Image (cartoon, rainbow, N blue to C red):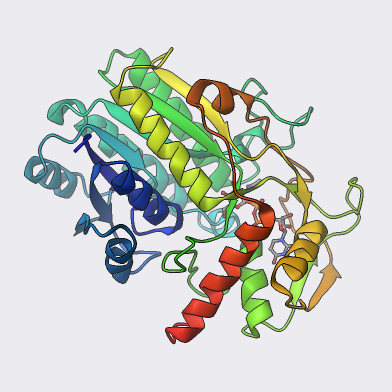
Length: 344
Ligand code: UD1
């Protein structure tokens, strides 16, 4: 055993893939998740994929006493990967206090408890949303943080500051902030993937549900942007590649290889793809024709953003390796599997 890692939000989309990669790398994992946007059967599927059942506790990170009790029962945790958070941009505009309370207090609770249990490492799920619309592309970690477009985006910015200020205050914490671009795809086993509640807000689940006939038509939000084909451009990163970045971040903290007590890395491919290019790639990769139509812009969307991942490539030795075709095929295989399992 290389170490014991607490993964909050470990039954969620990115969390579940990360748990598997941690287990593959020899880490023991304890998951806590309130199951607000996931299902307990994900734990069974993690076990099917990795052959190891992670410890799981249904717990809300807002519950300070519950966290305290849980940590006292799982001694010798070396680091925390904190995924548990609300993440729907539109919902955050409608329910800002719910987002601020949940996303901020969860992190504060964990940071407060870490010294008590001698937990030194923290990997925090941040987002390229902190850059807003960058002035130069691809965007590096040195680009200025822009005023957030939504309460969700603001929680990511504030949480980054909370981690920094806590470390500056002298707390015995080493942290890595990973700024994800747009995670997509599913585990190659098709046993883990993205399963949003209700109508999907994000592109890929909406797209695969449309391809499946669950949704009638995919709306492409805008074709009048200042991009080559007029649709928005994103850096779509395979979720397993992204999960592996977390394992490397944990290795780096535990092996004390960090150059600073708080480090920040872009986790993206370095390649921007437009929404229309993505649809085309999906059709070519799967042979499935997609019903889509162009509609007006979505409020709050960034025109174009993609990562300069040089720092992560060089310092972490991490690189996105999966092709967009394989990634889209994995998303489709996951959707087909959900049908087979009678879930969707
Ligand atoms: C947003 C957030 C990101 C967050 C993610 C999770 C910003 C800038 N980004 O990503 O930080 O982690 O949500 O929820 O706040 N699209 C369509 N039709 C659809 C759905 C999406 O055309 O039905 C388009 C969007 O307009 C966008 C692209 O697809 O151009 C990607 O959208 P989405 O998957 O929702 O992710 P982001 O908005 O980029």
